[in-house]
Length: 287
Image (cartoon, rainbow, N blue to C red; front, side, top):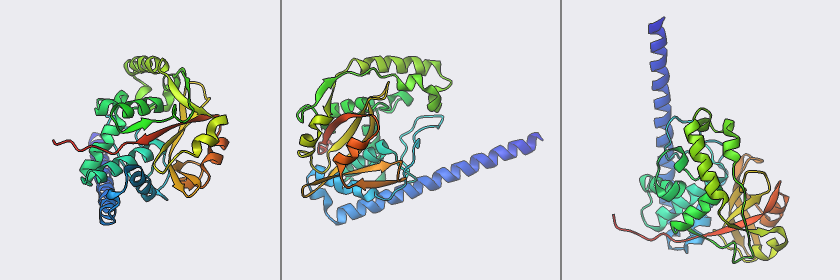
């Protein structure tokens, strides 16, 4: 019986390892193919926000999938073409665009950019080094000169929000379920973030702000849901006088384009307004 159980465990572990290896190879091949397209079409010569919007469109039609970063015993910078949520789409697209802009478009360089964007100060150091709250993601990436929050310039109003959704809903996060140490550290992070001001453009100023946005701007929908700062994020696409929104949609189950960004924002449940960030072109630094 023990032999049978041990053999079953070995087979299971081997199967999981093979599946992960296959997924990684599939993901790296997809990134390589997109790099070839971007460089062959000379997209990297475009202004960076336009490049970012063009790269984001390469993800259209990909499946929506929540929780792809959760559930593993150890935190790692994971990328998978099996699906994206709204945040992993925005992160993946900007990491790929930055790699291309630096003329370093490869899977390894892409993952390095992704880690720099996803984790606090660019350093992966466990589960809580990931920028879970979007306001933290915006502020940290502004400090790393990846983007610039232009919400105040567009009529945003300074607000503070008590953030505690993760610590009060620990059952939703596998890493938090059985770790009192992580919960304690998380609460300290939440208290710090709750003291921070952020700028949100209220709905009565939305039409004016929308008229000033350009392709590649990152639109973040602020929510009135208790304990949370933002509920959704996407990438603006300007075509003539119309502003669309590229995003990973749980409703359609895919990465899609909302043809009317303003109408979509106004219809979003519990919407409080929006914040907007404009991506910076990356600056090459010699190793």
